[in-house]
Image (cartoon, rainbow, N blue to C red; front, side, top):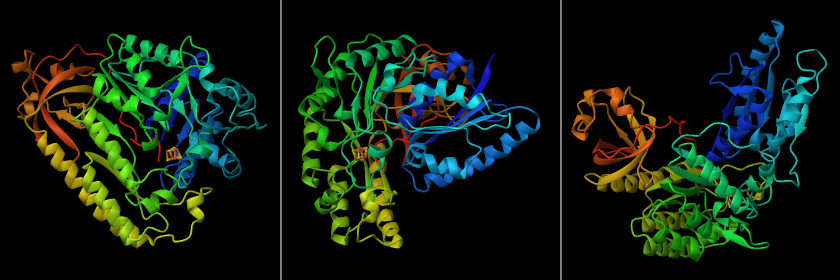
Length: 490
Ligand code: SF4
């Protein structure tokens, strides 16, 4: 019998990938994904711990689901509720205490055991005798060895998890505690999964990991041998039909020569890199345990640009880390100005329970954090706008992976990760598909979704570009999902 599964995903691409794999694991039990919680037999909240007040948001969502569950039970039906992901890992016991109606709590490393957890919880669910399941272990067996092949294609741009966990222990970050120690999947498994993704319509593969460039997977057919991320990317590039490769998120310390070289040599590797710097101050970077200084980061950026002149660099900043002085903040502004990031995410430091930074002396006043954040964000926004404006007139290959907000509008990404949209022809834009050899009308233009099309950039905004189709698009493939949070590694 078919049962309905609703998964609400918070946070980054890694969680999007995990949610898809949870659906794969549950498919043999008859669960089919649905788009809304109403009517679902099983609801999973796949949570993220990066954002401020993450746990409180989960409890507030759980309050709504509790009502749904009560209504269902009043009608003699049952509803299973589970909390997954990093909040579950960090606060499993507390969730069981505060939300006794939750049936299952499991961490990011145990979802391959979901069928067993569901069987245990479902046995008593809705029949008065409650049996609840908490599984937040870091099992010895890697979950990837137990996951089934993906049941559903992800779309033209597909996420592929190659690495998980982290051993870096940046002092502000919960990942080493919620995702566990660093683990890299064997290269042969990654290549197999990539081939299947391409066979089911993926044109672009985004390699995921909390610290993806620390990848060191077992080399195929060479016992004891390992491949780094550079080698993995070179091998992936040999897959026919795969047009684009990206990876996220990286640590500057792990940008080795082979990976930097791959940016110059592998055409399919897109000229964009999200490389979190967090601060420009050596003192703050040391307190964060980042293991590099501002000048180290500048040198890496130089080497990347030597390898690939047009590479677009994106980053993350944390403003107001404990002990950050005006001089430290000035160093951050200098670094931001020197590098010229094309996209950047800046956040106020917010202490995560259980991390060393939460207990550090010299916590910065919130008003100071806010004013510094504003200054930095203004600088970053100005650089991003200038970069986008410089793209006007350029021809770019855009991967259109979803409809835009307006009917008939297309949305996609440039090689440099800029959001690009093309308006429907009736909107009066400079993008009439008839000129590109297409029949006129919104239906014709949306047929471009799932392909890479040549686009002339006609307009620039702070966060997006507007383009005009120039022909050369491939056949329509598959509609895709909304974009998740870009951050994996904090
Ligand atoms: S910030 Fe990134 S590198 Fe640092 S501990 Fe977290 S996941 Fe690891």
